[in-house]
Amino acid sequence: MAEVLLFHHAQGLTPGVRAFAEDLRAAGHTVHTPDLFDGRTFRSIEEGLAHIREIGFDEARERGVRVADGLSSELVYAGFSFGVLPAQKLAQTRPGARGALLFYSCLPISGEWAFGPWPDGVPVQIHGMDNDPIFVGEGDVDAAREIVEKAEDAELFLYPGDQHYFADNSLPSYDADATALLTRRVIEFLGRV
Image (tube, rainbow, N blue to C red; front, top):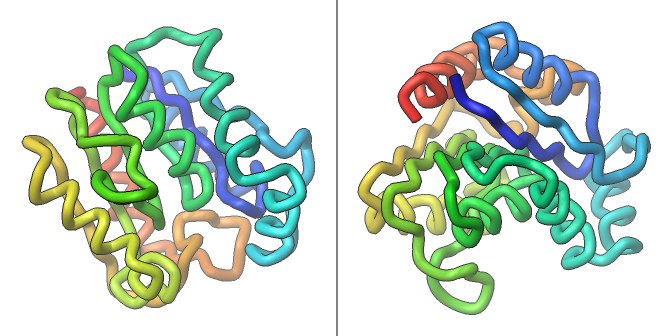
């Protein structure tokens, strides 16, 4: 079974993020869910992003990166939206990564924002909605396609819809059908890494 370090999105460690982690635990995996906001949650993405700006994007990301220091190096790194920043950085730069799960967001592997090329031997799944104004509209889907094109074991899954946090069952953006399919794919991925 896999050991997963799962990072929350900009609205914080919501009951929906915790519920997703519990689904993975119920499938037999160990899942760590650090709270990068010290217990704070936010009613909207905009409020969460304002909090991240107060902390500083780099500092907020590095809080997540530091969490890994006390854990095994053989982790699957996972993140929802903002949580992709520390997850993707760790997957690309920390030796021993067993895989990466990137939900609703993806950083490029070339250019200014890149942590470098995708590492050999690190499988990755990227999940987003095909009309999400953030994932598609801000170019994350293009970054995801670049990874799929260049990495040896990479998959991009697009779900019909326009919601960003669609797998968080505590938010109005939740899509039960898309989440069920996403969860099945994630559990299959964790079973093989």
